[in-house]
Length: 435
Image (cartoon, rainbow, N blue to C red):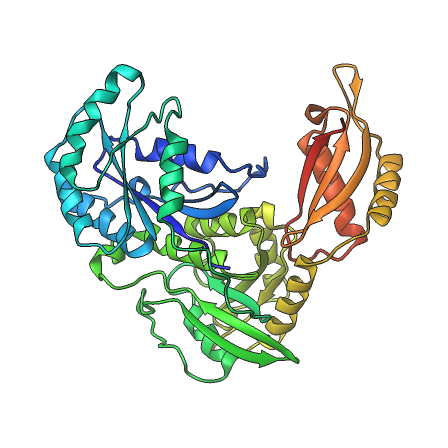
């Protein structure tokens, strides 16, 4: 299901990233102390008044050596294209600046709702200083303190009112999956090879695909919706100069997917951008299949595949649950395995386990490996129950949540994987103190 998007726009040094972190922090997210999970501050998810939404921090869009004025313009244009609502952030300490007015001029031309917030209003005395910002033409400026979080609730209330109505999407039981990865790893070629026909432009020029393209097809008696992530769109060089924009587009496609195919280029290996996007898919709780494309181009011996798999596992330690398949869009090698793998991962994402069965597994696990003792106090686990799917999410009730160390959480998750088929899906485990 598609969720609305808020973009935070403003000139440099008004506190965009601080407000971004504040907003994303309002969501009671499950945080994993997992090595290798790269968290990108460009894009996040939050919840306010029970409504989930995406947040873009344009301060995370680095235009490199572009002049400052051009950077501001490009960042604002990206936000305008991607957002349903724009949070226009200014700074009470500097008053209305020429740069603020430049951003305002850009936003005037956008057919998007704008909420104006004045940051660094850290005390009551400064509230009278915000009235100058009426001159920007976006109605009542809302006072805000990123440092203390004051006024954030009022700002988010205004954002919620500005979001489009939360309309239910047409019922669609198809399995939705997206192909993500760096430009030129062969995503569009894989789309064409899977479909068996040329529905998407294929080129070896990075950034050929300009829009996310949904394609419906049937295989193995099931309906699928395939999302070919664009990475680049519309304004040409504005986006082509911004690698993080490609990441942003991939992240939005991930939000719409049940299963994500993380496409790697066998010739080029693994890059940091691969880790960034895969980390987001993991944290978003999506099912994941790692697809190594262009496998036909390598000179191989009997150890090549195992060596490459070991390298992938080393670089993506947090994706130890994700199956790996080595394919070639050109020769169609092993492509017939993808629909079945996607079906299996989607099924595992929706798997529910009865509480009685869960607790039998838990009791056996504790018998084999007793709970740890920390500072003379032993962890006691009383009960476990499943509370959600997509991804499978479990709550364990304990005597003290601080005693449930990450390593013992991993032990419980591994026992769940050994007992039940959760191949391809992350598992979320939440500790709660028994009242």
